[in-house]
Image (cartoon, rainbow, N blue to C red; front, side, top):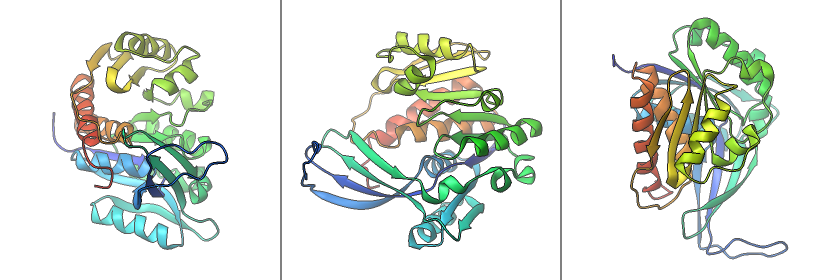
Length: 291
């Protein structure tokens, strides 16, 4: 492995409101929560933070609104040492936000209002100058498919590795799929994309990865407490989940993707990168959700 590499993340920026509740509300019910707190998020922002934490020089491409939420997100990126020069400000749409409900087990459910993230398009994101020096580009499905497709094309031309975290799951255009080097999905997303039953253990996760590797050069399936499996041109591997005391699973997938990108950008092989990403995700789920 050489040294810290450069990771470009294009994706969503959200201002989250996290609510802790002893039970999920049913239809028509007003449940009583125990506490709430603001938490900066969005899959793009979370993955950029994870890549920076793993040591990569990290650049964020995104869009926020001209409001307090947007200003706080921009300030946070700057504090963390993430280059936010490619984060633009919308004059018409508000910053994306979400409300996330957490139960005592650490499980969560969320509702997202995408706002300014939906304004990201090819004209905004296709930054040749940034990608000409990038080792890895990270994309997710919380911004329009057209933006992902355009940026993936620029990245492939520049020789960067393109990682797509296909979350939330949605049909992918053939054009985008052809530009992805590594697909990362959880068990639910793997089932939806591959048209199979949801993987419940490491063996079925490996089978799902093999199925997805028929379409993508390399597929990585994260299966929660079961572990991680991958298949494709770079080899087939399985990693049991790291032991961890679960406080909250929120953001574990983003931590995994960001760390994976950082290690690959630094020149490490896929096996090392997956192992370290697995460990990083385990550390995160052992951390109080407000930290």
